[in-house]
Image (cartoon, rainbow, N blue to C red; front, side, top):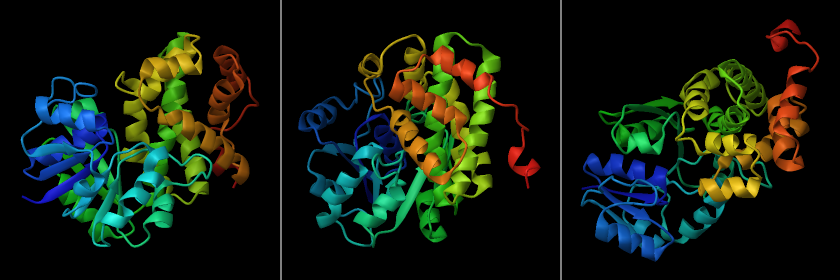
Length: 336
């Protein structure tokens, strides 16, 4: 069996490892915690993230990262976006330039504002890079509930190799040449999902959430295009597709976190309760700074930033959004 490596033993890394193992690949999943590796190898279950899902015998864990990446053609990086750079640095001595790195995190690097492909080019410039994104809750993927995602690379042949790697009866994979748009769609939808959660926490109804999602896709498209993305990508799986699932499902940690903020919890209380990385928080900070630098109007992002960074009352911020100066819906087209 061909060996595939998955870096990161959270819910998403585990779900993708299961997809690959069920296809017959020998999957080696790396975790930095040796006790977690020992427990899962013994019980065949990741009780912390995917309780009730039994790992097949061809899926095993290790806390030795050199052992994990050795002898595999494909390396799936499922570590959080803020750990991506350090992970690239760690694996660099142990990999060769033929190994394809598949990043499945959805975020931007805090401090630099870089997309993860840009981080990758700084750390591992000679390896092929593919990003996988789309509407895909780990809890459903692990249970073989039909899911579609998209993979993007500068080299379409590399993207097609990754497409072939993951394609399964319950896991359909499309390709897209717009790596910038796919990465930004995956990162920015977390901001809007956080806002959707705030709406729910406050007690607003379907009208408010529909408005937030619709204007949210417009906002993320506007900022994405200014950063070099193709507008049509945001109408696809990594844009509106991921936005819909993340804004409406309780599987979404970003929406759950937003609900708690909307109910009046502090950010610390929220993170303590969610107990998982909430990428939308960092994405909001980065998008706020990038939009300011590029001169792009992002009122929803600004509003969420005001709640998170300045401690503003979510209800008051919502009112401020509603009473802004009137606009055309297609502002960019009207002003051409």
